[in-house]
Length: 259
Image 1 (spheres, rainbow, N blue to C red):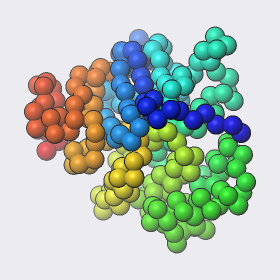
Image 2 (image 1 turned 90 degrees about the vertical axis):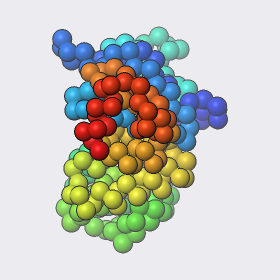
Image 3 (image 1 turned 45 degrees about the horizontal axis):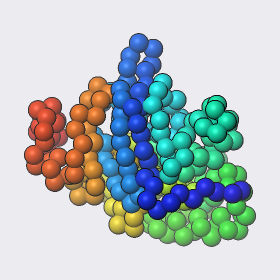
């Protein structure tokens, strides 16, 4: 399968005036966001502010009502040359450039750990099984699970499951990894092991958009912090400014409550 490779100066993600409603409820309104390659963007906000919907729109798990989304220079959802919506094959090809790590892990329970990591490269990319296995072994070592190749998800802790999910996302060599509150379903003692893996990925130059309530992670790792309120981006700044001198009273109150 041929793959599109973007020029080095093209943003990993570019969103312009993206809006999304469910019935009469406008969940996102005129979202503008550029994420350059190698950047980590943390998305903060109270429950119901539209954070998870924004992530799901980026990889077209939810179809926006209007606006444009480009992944590595290619518009997702719309085949601009043909002037129509992408078909399922076209969408799957481009969606493969966005690794998604869900709050609830979403591992395949009937597959072993290594099979979970190998599955998408084999069936989406057409990668030979032995090549996929070599990559899976390397990635499981990267996330600290070298000894769990043959284990099944039901035997793992929540933190281990989430690290398998991260390895599975990495296996597709995505342009950007989308994390939807990756630690919120974990016991407190398991949060640190997942955040450590994510911090290491940021040091390696992976592009990441992270919906999170982990303030210290956002402060330490982010290049940008975005705050959503009722579907609007009301503040966007580098972490030093965002956490020490926010522009809006709403963000100041949020930070006080989260401290």
